[in-house]
Length: 93
Image (tube, rainbow, N blue to C red; front, side, top):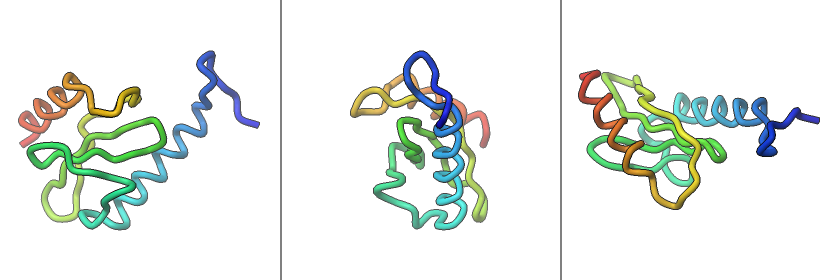
């Protein structure tokens, strides 16, 4: 049995989902697509890890940079999360 927070979520289970999603990205790279990842905007992609979303972009070779992670609560990616990831990508390059 996993411990849960006041909201009923298990931090251990959430971490495992994130690790699994990152493992899929490592294994399949740019070939990873639905239902695990989808393109967002300007070379940004969204990696799905349960209710968590990780915004990333492909860097040199087979490297990926995770720019931002958030808890998804709506059907669309919130503008402030997308804007933050775009700004971070601009700073990274």
